[in-house]
Length: 482
Ligand SMILES: NC(=O)c1ccc[n+]([C@@H]2O[C@H](COP(=O)([O-])OP(=O)(O)OC[C@H]3O[C@@H](n4cnc5c(N)ncnc54)[C@H](O)[C@@H]3O)[C@@H](O)[C@H]2O)c1
Picture 1 (spheres, protein in one colour):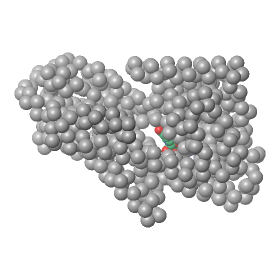
Picture 2 (cartoon, protein in one colour):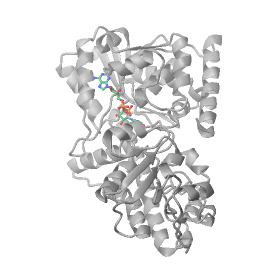
Picture 3 (cartoon, protein in one colour):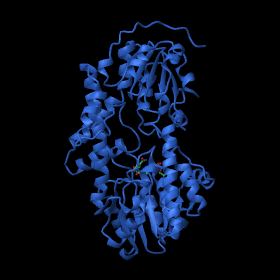
């Protein structure tokens, strides 16, 4: 675990300690709710453990029995800093339990939080089949009044359709309330984000249900979290518009970075100069190999598809997706620019496979497109990632997954950094220079100091670091490290 992660875990543990102390001293009253969280992925598990840490009784349920078996042994089925500690702590207080019996978990609860996946279909719309499967199970197990909280990211008007669906299936209006409660946590800092949200959005037409869900979040940040209580459609749109805006901001800075490459300007300075303007702010102004993950690509696609259905084309969001597709091809273009068009037989080292640092999630990761393009060039790929290699090996079994950075760079003709893991920021380039076959480095995250790197003899290409281009280092082949 690196220092940033350790700090984030410490911070989470401290917050958790304070919360549990508040509950024990009676300052925060546990609410008499039983909450069942359906789906124990990145969102569901963090939410379930988070609600339990606020003094609620929580049951986490999933149809994936392997996941549940691990969780019952307090093992976390994916990598998320601080989550192991959170789950361990709340599970020992007896506030959190795990089961694969969805029906039973539904009957025991008065609040049901749906956090199943809503991946993209081929037509760009979100696949809601898992969500409606859950609804069918709820309908079969309606033994008392239930507040159904939709935390999964669902297309605009879905919550209205859910309500209609329940009524059509014969569930009386007096027996349920639907609440849209979109989630904004970021993988990699999900526990911190849950405990420190920028806002809580509650969309419903039922005032009592809104109050009940608002009360659950109340202990967070001493009750200072801005609360937005609205209709379900506005709540849904807040989530989509937020993700599409952030995705657009990334595509925007990526385009400016690409221009920097051509006009010999430096994006790091340009972004700093932009970010100091409070109207812009410095966040999401780091160029990279294109956005990935389970949210920005799929949510932008869904928003465009929905808007188009209403005959309201969203050109900016659509444009950000086009820019992103091109951006995900940039690493290989840069390799060819440096080394020539024929890469056959070369050894390419990829550092970083997850879509961003501090997660093992590879959904829509730029590494996928990069590997696909490189494999067409008949190169040998040696990849290293602190936690995501096993996931990537399912998609690309032909890649060599190194156990260390040293193994990954050994005899490489070019190194591409794709993920901004802290360990890559501390690489000793002098040492690596003696391990590679050719000293070419493409830093798609701008985490390497170009001057230090070039001083060791590397030919360096960052992203938007035009001022450092053409360092004119004479390339000399080095003996292999074997
Ligand atoms: N991952 C994020 O960073 C993030 C952030 C905000 C919102 N979201 C949204 O939250 C939702 C969940 O995302 P995720 O990344 O946690 O997904 P995930 O794929 O990690 O987890 C979904 C879980 O739901 C389970 N599941 C599927 N069908 C089920 C059923 N019928 N009953 C019980 N469990 C079932 C799956 O087995 C899986 O464990 C999505 O809509 C996503 O868009 C995700």
